[in-house]
Length: 111
Length: 113
Image (tube, rainbow over all chains, first blue to last red; front, side, top):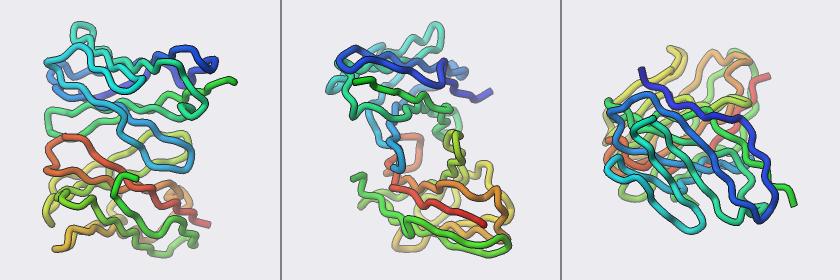
């Protein structure tokens, strides 16, 4: 079935450390994945995406890794800053074309 | 700023009432999506429109309805409101509505008392 799940509901990291947020998906036919960041009181904001023909994609301080063998997606944030504190959602493009969102991981950055 | 606008930002109403939420997509986007986000919950897909036509339906209650107008703005109508309808309602838009990146508005916070 279609489901996207996050391994941990809350991740707490020290400012300056790297953060890794994980996501598992169930549909091996999914070909497009997106990470969103949602700050308190705001709408989800696009961070980075990756297509299934890639294993890795880098943005500014963020990297998304895709492991199709184990159907796992991760978001790495380098040198985590207080402004990175938010809920992070992964989303998977289903075979019907809809985006299926995971439940979200809360990232807390300690000063 | 995503380019997607939603009004109102906050809405407080009573049970049994009806409200209308409005969304204007990004310039050039033809598809609009509505999501509900309850406290500590993820994003629940409600419905999608593409160029004025309904394209996909998710977990949308029969008390809820939506439409997309010729100018591509969309409205979500919530009727016979219940306490459990209190949530954040987000609108998102995308270019073609084929599972590409969706850009979200700031949301409408609905409180049903």
